[in-house]
Image (cartoon, rainbow, N blue to C red; front, side, top):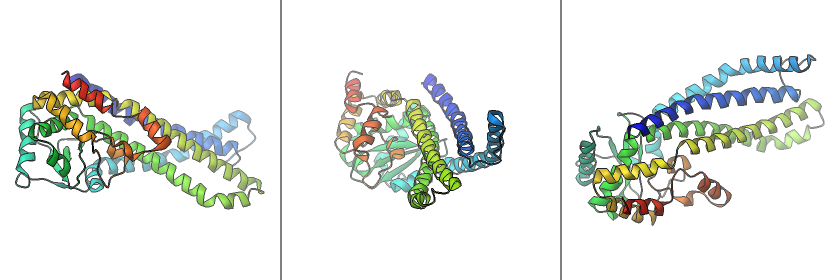
Length: 324
């Protein structure tokens, strides 16, 4: 447990350092492409040395803006993630009087493992799922659907809650939040660039007879490709960082907390028949679920997501729990 917590803390730091490095490298490449295509600031005939000098000057002028915007974006998203997630899944906070059964299960398990009581949220949805979120004791939250509570008995529900509490104890939730914020930043940049290219492609082609305008159009195309490549690379990076082992570890922790591995295995089998949240089709939130609803993606994207999935095969998880 302690070694896993230290590992997740190290990964969090690496993500915090790695993303700005990748983003600044992409900014440098952006400036270099503009210079090579004749659209950069202050291009002269100084040869390779002059080109590098101009690129570095342009990069230094862009860097404060890039760092400032990304830092502001990250801070806002990082500290508002709890309300954003709650709004996305339409969850409502739960007090003991609202549902003593669920509240008492969560409270008993937290007392058993010596952790603080997290916020408990409920989603009015017939589908079966649960997830943990948050970055610290003030924001740690366990969210379950009404469908989950209706279909699972007390032992099965305790197994699921134990699984989610283990994610919190292992700092998995903080790692997920960091990766989700960073990937969201890149995805937004890619979306904006793609829309600019889509809506202005015709005007670019009409102006291609002008050398400078043609170069600018080509530069924008390159920028779009670079942004897409960075987004894809970083998505893969975070998928690798968020190891599938975290789900196996959470299963083991949940089985230990509830004292009944077979109950958690039974719960996973029931959830796998109808996983997801009816009105939520966001991959960044789906990766937090105890079982990923595969129907969120299809075709090529489904194959890619399966290859770099953050969740192991459900049947394998059940098999291991039954042998626990």
